[in-house]
Image (tube, rainbow, N blue to C red; front, side, top):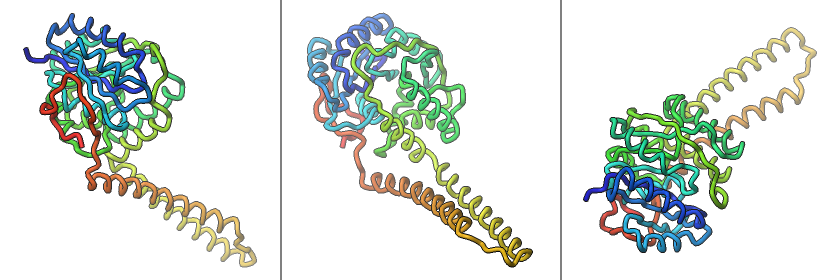
Length: 319
């Protein structure tokens, strides 16, 4: 029997939640796609024994499949590893902490059946820390400007995707993956449904402020040249301002020859121009570094072990 839906879940630091997650998923999927589903858990080299738990759960569940990455690759790269092994007509991605409700999966599939290429689940009340909500709002704003994302579209990791769109995303071979950027490049036929966001069942999130900033940089520099354009515009405005200030100083000197142009004006000009130059060098360096890693063919992920999966079915190289 062909697979109707593949569930791809990156796993990091959630060994205690996985048994409940497997039970909840089996119940929800048997109701909407009986015996035509698979769940792919991608262990992103976390700090606990989640891989041993995945192996144990998969022993008597042929629909549950596992991938163990040799090193931490990040959430979006782990999702790409899951995409490369998914065989379903539709693919659903979600978090491993049960903050995303498996009972919402049938509604996601129905939206895709109705014709949408991409379906995001938005949440009215997210159970996240304040800094994480603020960071998400900032990321949403930047995505609207850099990726031309509609302002009313919330980029949630709980999403449903047609297989053709996943295949389009997998054509990207660069090491710096931003899944939503790849999906939005492939289609504008998207839909949104509302869902309830639950408190994390166990442990704590592995998504730190540092990782959030890193993800934002991936989105900003891997899918847009807007930052370089902003730096160029800043340089133009800075040059114009410096020119006007120079004219003002010259004019003042002409009407008041006794005036001494002091250190404050000189230091302000030096710091202002120096700051802009460092900003420009930083943006150019970020792009140059990413170009170097792409040229060097740095892998998106490296797979160590698989459970209930045939290595020959992998759609893309793992290293």
